[in-house]
Image 1 (cartoon, rainbow, N blue to C red):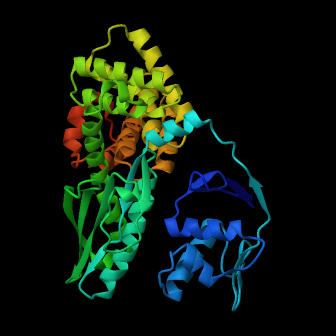
Image 2 (cartoon, one colour; image 1 turned 45 degrees about the vertical axis):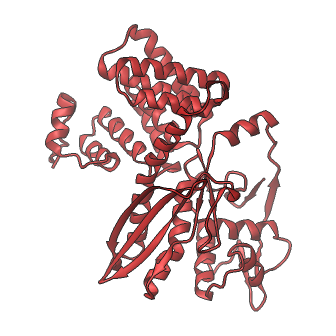
Image 3 (tube, rainbow, N blue to C red; image 1 turned 30 degrees about the vertical axis):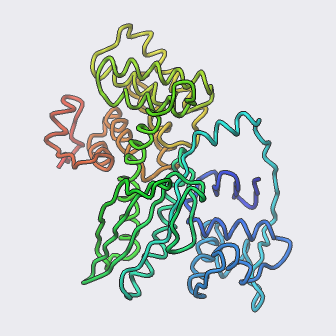
Length: 424
């Protein structure tokens, strides 16, 4: 279901808001708020209804609701003064008043639905516990679960679900494979988060870590902590899923399982491993010809073959890599990792840096916190002869800081300092 109004489009199925064709980042509660208001636009929606649906009946302050309502207005280009889209009916509630066109989205076949569901891994996020009675800690605990859900939901291979009951023991009854939660503690101007990932079936800890930040930085600290957690938890989940796919019987694997097995072979970084990976990605494509990650990763394998000097037929390999990248672009238009891999292949193999730059910007619009996208963006910038920008973006995508001297030694003659400046 999609709703179009003024220059905006709200896509309920994709959980997306676009304004002037630009994807707008929304917190989950803000999206739910818009969804409730637009679905009931023929009438006034009371505060009590919003609390019941958006906040699941939890008691929240008027200030919290006002903050979310202001965020919703800002997202659609409205203000509390103008109220062109969302009107406050004093003493009664709110109403969505913009002229709206509703569009039904055609349902895919049952086969397509089952394939999509089988390719997504369900992770549940529970509310963070507040250790102590510091008000700031409670505020961080309240928003951290939502922030993590927002960031993780942008990873198209995950199905993110919130588990509202605080203190509940998540199990398979919640239809999730993993559960993410933790605790918040504030002391001496610092905030500390203990984050844990749990196996929903056994209750065993799969991963845990500690993250800290300066409390004085406010929302910037919240944002950075959430980004750090997601940047660490994503490869952890990938490794767990690779291990899971390895244990599946050969006659029971789907496209995503084949792709995970291909990643395992790719990560050996050997000539045989990359060759095996391409075969597994091709098998995934045979199972599901529209499975974008398989196209993207197969194209990336050819980037690695070029890097190591392992082309057997350069012309044929570049043609195949370009074909795979184009298919990845076609089927993965909203998947930032797929777009990043396609951009890498188009830039380095097809030698089309301008097209690569466009693709990587599209990837970053969908996943601005994805390290892999920033890393590819750095290589695209380097290909375009912009070393200073390349260094900054490669560093943002790297697991370890990149020093200018090391950058020079790795990239060699392709590195040129900008006019009047240096790489330092």
